[in-house]
Image (cartoon, rainbow, N blue to C red; front, side, top):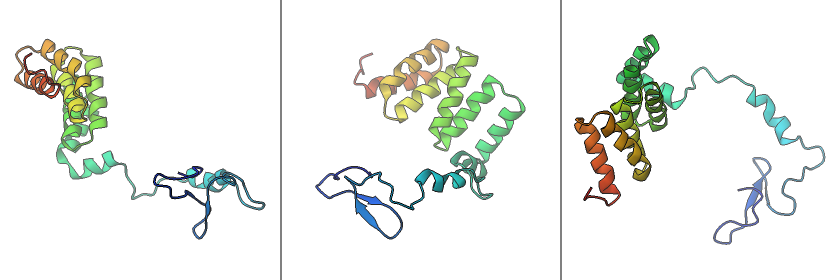
Length: 168
């Protein structure tokens, strides 16, 4: 937290100038010494570098170790249907990449607002993130889209229970 006068507990904050020295933050924070290269000029060349060949994002790594995710991605790439969108979202959810799962479930609901599995998936993600109140509308939409779905009713029940509304 460079630029802060102090840290919680009373310990003074330190501003890191290089690998060997640290100076207290405060009156000299942000002051550039004579002959010192501006930070943006020093960092700019690194920002333009391509990623290393062996680096990968979390989703790219997950598809390497999850055959289910890799096959769902391949099916979706070959035929981007609502069913494949939901299948891909479920595969992301199963490996714990909930932000990607959320995006795919949401895309499926835009393509087909009566896709109960997509609404149910969105509700489950909100529940798993610890925000059951935000998933309540999606849970009700899942039951609306498929009133006979045990999964949708189960999700609605668990969300209502988490909200303390077990009588509904």
